[in-house]
Image 1: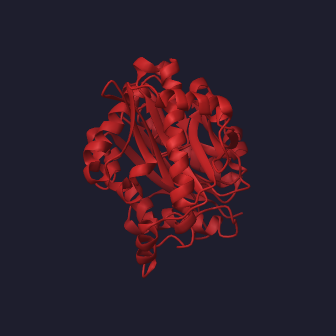
Image 2 (image 1 turned 90 degrees about the horizontal axis):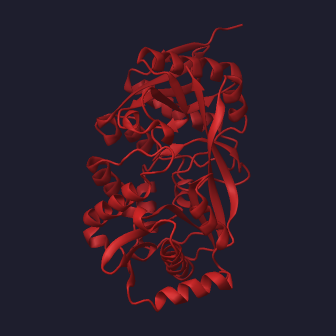
Image 3 (image 1 turned 90 degrees about the vertical axis):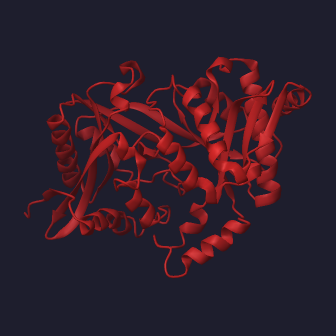
Length: 383
């Protein structure tokens, strides 16, 4: 039996091998959407991803007979280490992610290697997968392998959950996405709530201003930091990450798909929606060259998609658990639904991810006829 060798990623060639592995493992899976390799390279490279300003990571490759058969990252987020332990992170909690393996034996060795690295950093608890953070691609897909994932949602071998559990891990949190039919009217109760809000002169739901998107992104993410601050797994988004995220997202920002809710002139809630760009980049095989960049730019001028994704929404803490919070959410959903169907041809929405214990957000998804279509699980283990 040939031994499996685990070694750290050191060179740019190693990074390319790290990025290329899923392209081989999922080559025959029609529901895996190949990401843009340049985007993944930026994510794992210090200086390209501002996460590294408050985080440290080591990437590893597994090789057998000279062929790469697995990969994993082990990492620390210094902001996460400062969070309250009762919210899932906190002192002594390290992470791993980007987990891919050809077989269970390789996966077991990779996870053990990541754990050894975390122990060397004096971590006492392992939480994963997070690739690299809770804000990027958290969890491993355990249910919903029968259709492709939408933009910035992961897709994984259905066996991975079992392999992780066999390595001594227990599930600590499930994340749900909801599939929502948006080409049919919402239930009458929701329509009445929206109509009531439209008559309330205190409420203004406005479009985002793409021409001033840096300021709008800062406003949105300030609401997000407040709204999500009590959630499990929360890690604050830094100013550098705000600027970076705004720059990244600007090409898929459309004024009528991102809404900011104001009450008495104060911005208190937002909802961000993107056309599912995976429907286009899935055709590119991971590269924008030589001509895919032009195809993408042309498509972005007036995208037509079947699916819209709502990756983020938030209502400031002072309004949470009030009738006003639900009303603002339904009003934003209604306006974005109308634009999605009339301007972009969408018939389906995807809402999430939503924490399994986030009752208010789950209620919003269920109230607009949403059904859970994918489940991602985050695991933990004492080291």
